[in-house]
Image 1 (cartoon, rainbow, N blue to C red):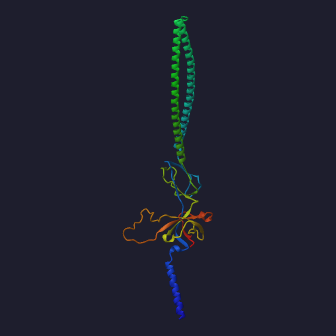
Image 2 (cartoon, rainbow, N blue to C red; image 1 turned 90 degrees about the vertical axis):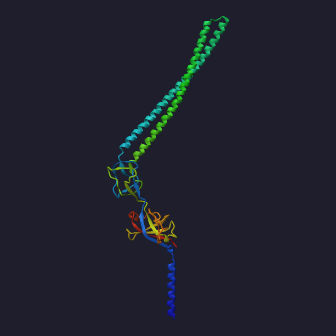
Image 3 (cartoon, one colour; image 1 turned 90 degrees about the horizontal axis):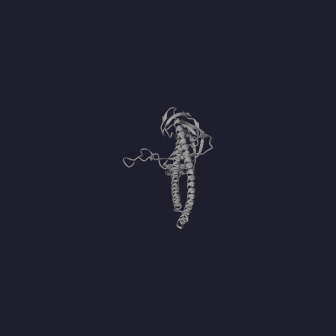
Length: 340
């Protein structure tokens, strides 16, 4: 009887455990793992900004480069000639402004001379008026001759005409100064345009040099000496050496408790026995199927439910010697410590 009770109790325990196991959701596991994970990097495709012929290629396939290294040099003869011409245009425009400013200064001196002449004209006119009044009074009293009166009147008219002439000359000189101001503004605009063209030609010259934007390794080198390339044409791909990460594709049923910052163990197939450390950097916003070029349409026809996978980006912690051996595309297995 006791034996039967023992068997019955064991059966109850087994059945109860089985029920708990079957009702236990996958996301409740304290460790979430997947082998659908790979080493990735933000690859950079380098392309020219201008068209031209490749003069030199300074790197080979799989070569390690440093930020700022010259990778590809395009023929820069035309760019240098344009730069020289634009520099000459800048110098000519600057010289034209200097000449106009010198002429403007000379014009101001001419205006000052006319102004001084008008002051002299005013003094002579006053003297001529006094002489005319004096001789007119003398002629009326008989103490002077009408001839002297007429000479004084004529001299007065001469001084009036001289003053009007010098006033007109002063007005013309002042108007000429205004026009010279406008000419200087136009010359300054031409100088700014010449400087802008010089900066543009300097940029064009710099575009003949394709530099490494970061430390990395050259891959897919398509650049060849003598080839004629167009803007945007891929010449080589640069794999960054300091920004490798792991993209793990987890089933949607595993992600209920996965959050950023959780520790991750990374086991690389190519490095048996080595265990790398990382942490969850961020979770993808959509499944791979949703981002496919031809997304699935489940609104028509028969439907079979398939568990979807969502990408999880895992940052590899620094100061791990094994990182130097990682290559983009390596298969890995990741285990997120959810901590439940």
